[in-house]
Amino acid sequence: MKPRISMITLGVQSLERSIAFYERELALPRMESPPEVAFFVLHGSWLGLYGWEALAEDAGVAAQRPGFPGFSLAHNVASEAEVDAVLRQAVSAGATLTMPAGRKAWGGYSGYFADPDGYLWEVAHNPLFWVGPPDEDD
Image (cartoon, rainbow, N blue to C red):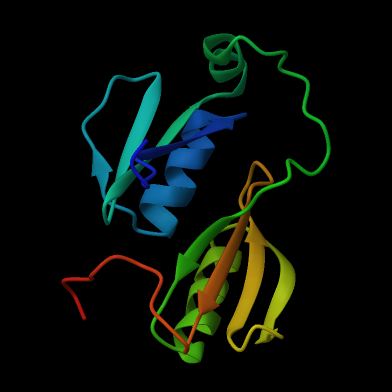
């Protein structure tokens, strides 16, 4: 297995609400896709949104949602100010701030928000090394 994640697919309660959150509010570029799914282009991978029940059925698991799923998604940025800006943008788009940004024991600066379906996103600046792919905008 090669070390990469090609796509992250989130099971969502309302596809329309989640599309609005990611496309219109967070401005992720959306790909053309069938009406029952939405795909967004990320640098080096894709984000997929699919109905909660449909994704559970596709994976062959029960659709009951336990509490904390045991993972978070991370969005790394180039500065502490960018962390604060992305967190503000997410909250103004309807996300819930779960951990305000602050300095971390590992030497960086980060905070967390939960999207409309409760998925945790860490927004982080790591001054020790860049953990993201090359960004053509930088």
